[in-house]
Structure formats: C-alpha cells, structure tokens
Image 1 (cartoon, rainbow, N blue to C red):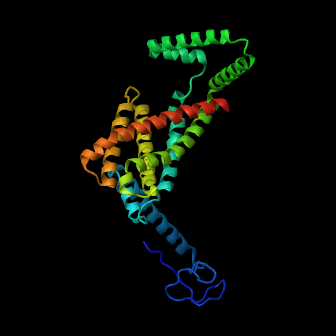
Image 2: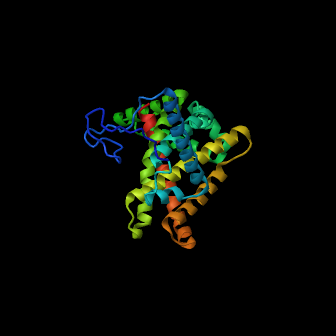
Image 3: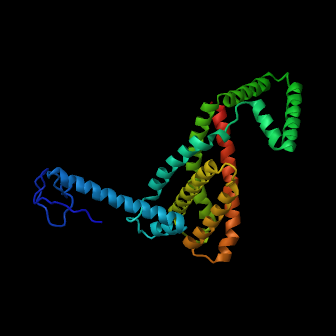
Length: 297
C-alpha cells in the first residue's frame, strides 16, 4: 500500500525545488511530506499504517504455519515487502516463547536440590538412578584416592559447591538458564543454516538463503512448542512431546522439499541425517549452556 503524501513544492528544510517523483529531498534527505495538517488526518494515517502492518503480520503468520518453506522462498526471490522480515518475526515470536516457558514450563528446567534430583530420578527411572548412584560411589572413591592432590580436591569441591548453589537458588537458576538458553537458540540458528549449507552444497546457494530457512523453521518450532505448552496447561494428562517431534519433522520435510526443489525421495534421504545432526548440535549446546549457567552462577 503506497503512502499518500502531501508533497511540498520546495523543501522546507533546505529550499530545494522538488520534482514530482521526489519523496525525499535529494539535497538534505528530509521526507517530502507535510505533517502540518489537522489531527484527524494524522490519526487516519496512523490507523491506515497500523492496519497495513497488521495485514502483513497476519499474512506472514498464515504462510509460516500453513505453507512450509513459502516465506523462505519469497525472501530468496526478493519478494519481501508483503511479509514481516524474518529476524523481526523471530524476535517477536521468541519474546512470547520464552515468556510462555517462564510462566508455564520453567519448573521442569531446575530441581530444588541434589537430594530432590536423586529422588525424582529414582521415582521416574530406577535403573538410571542405580547407575547414577554407582557412578557417584565410584567418583567418591576416586576422590578419596586422590586426596593428596590438593588442587584436584579444591577444584572438585568448588564445582560441587557451584552446582549445589545453582540448584538451591531455584528462581535465580531458572532465570539464568532461560537467559542462556535464549542465547543458545540464537547461536543454533546460524549453525543450522550452516548444516543446510553443507547438505545442499551442490546447489551453490548463498549462505544467507540457508540462514533464512533456519530462521523461519525455528520461528515455527517456537510457535509449535508454545501451543504444546498451552495444551498441556489445559489438558494436564496430555503429553505433547511426541506430537511436537513428529510435526517438526513433517514441517522440515515439506519446507526442504519446497525451497530446495529436490524430489520427495532425495528430500526424505537427506531429512534424517540433517535432523539427527541438528538434534546432536542442540544436545551439545544445551549441555554447554547448563555448564556455563552453573559455573557463572
């Protein structure tokens, strides 16, 4: 929607004489648009601009959800004016995503203490608890054998204290972990773009195209997880984890097929290693994020 301008004959700032096509002054850069009008005209303009942005906003969300890869394709083709820019869309959605996690799902990120963690693990998975206790016993015996190594004992004690403090300060730990996870996801996006760059090397695409795919994919996954969290809040007995995984896989498959124009078979063959590489990267970054959160707590 073109902006309806009330144009000057001369620039009020520098006196340059405008031509009809000048929307901005070529001399000083000031916009060629008269704002000295009744308030009702300014209100009408603001409403018109807002309505136009809302239309763009909802159109973008509609295609993001219902047509995997469509927004990436449009961006790569240079058809961008009708849609919200990818990074702006990601930032907007991520704010609501981490707010939703903080309000409804953050209690699962941290347990209150070490004993509570052991009890929780024993209740949910006795075999895993037994292995943890065995490993803990072995670690204690090894520490006992290494008591003469003073530096090692001090380091182990320091790490143990940090870990216990991290678990005991539950609210502070949760906030720090959420903050670091948000940064982790921001790092993961360009890395996933690089994974796509490697898998589709033969297409000789610019890295930016793969990065935009990654941004749109993560934005959709954020929306999906938000919806899943809200479903579990309403229906507490309903487990959405499996559905989130399957829908994410299906969305990624159709998005890859739409953007990279390969056959269904070639896309399916590439999907599994791409997704497994992505999950492995996610797991490594998450463990590193938890470690950093503990060490700097």
